[in-house]
Length: 522
Image (cartoon, rainbow, N blue to C red; front, side, top):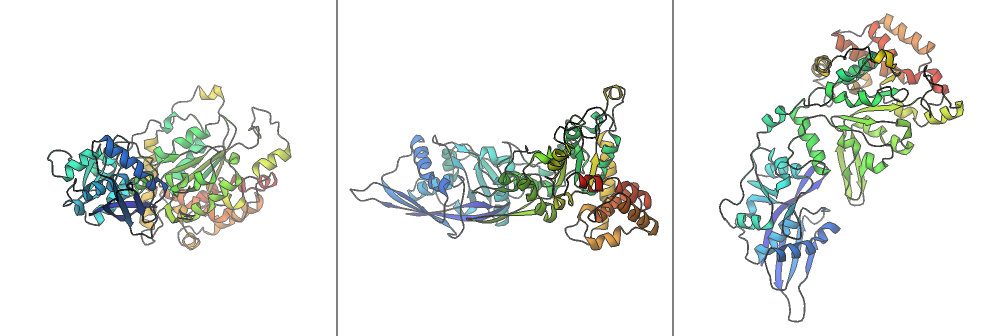
């Protein structure tokens, strides 16, 4: 007897429909039954035989010895993961007349089986739900832990099951076994936006650095901080998402898909409502940062999509890991190639990095003595390559605030007030770049756009020329200064880039100065 059931596999942040064909035939008198799975399954799918047999036995479902052939079509696409356990098991039971097949064409089914017949969550429920709706399926059956994640897709009935027996009863027409989960996506999304436990008002002092963060947020610029330990670098970086524009529904859906594929969504969680903030430890591997493994999972750069990637202790990361960032920062997407195939993930994020000025951390600190030799400082700073530094628009030095001053200071400006100015500046940029596909903020401007939207007047150009000669700024600093100046002008509501905007932007290129180059930044 043959049965046919429908499921899906995940590739990148998209889903590929998979048809599961199950054929059962009796065994000979002298031979035991066996299961063969074809259609490019990975090891986790091949292991499903043991899980299915145990789940069926522990659910009280006995079958005679038989040969089972399972085909995962199309056969030229690699299938991965444990989400095929449930549809294969249902297919075997249907081929033995224990499950009616009349509903099979209306549903996609996915789920991992435990040995007792209960269902475990899967990765990628959201992109699979999107694909099911696109293909016109009436509904999707998934483990209960994935139901809210998948139910954000409207015009699709999503059923959450806890056991294989529940799925059988539902397909056999037993009433009141499973009910579709209904989520008001927009209401849920907007109800939970802006819920932050931290705020920029908690940062005392450091007004110049907070100004740099406001500019970075307004223009989507990457930023690096250099300063001694305890100066507040990590504290301010963690508060950056609180001043960024709120996620749009489209951005949230795309971000949630990435986290769904990575298995990062918590049970009962729907759409992500806050911009991601990823802060990997400096021991992270190249694969952990860029993505990969045999399953080509998304890495930290993709998990930070539409949010912030914070690299604390920047110079402690391996140089090979840091160099991986160059292509994602430029292209805002990353391609992962493995023997099984190639997948592409989006990774449009803001890079925020922090570092000490030397190994001991106190070079140039007026309150502590630096114990590092010039050679140690040079080797320490040389871990940051010129091409990587070229992709960071704003450099700012930061000093620790003395306790005597810290104790006297009043709470700073709240994140909500800063965010209002950031949103206003982003709206100006949104209107400016409407004719240009894929350009949303000043940090993404091309050289041609710089000439069109950030061309300095004669006085500003003279100032820029003098600054580059006097401060020994590198040639790569030129376009970065213009981009940042354009953002400063947008915050001020100025249509043109003026000399005051250029002057402030020049102050954010500290690491391009000649004295920094002499100390080892190459």
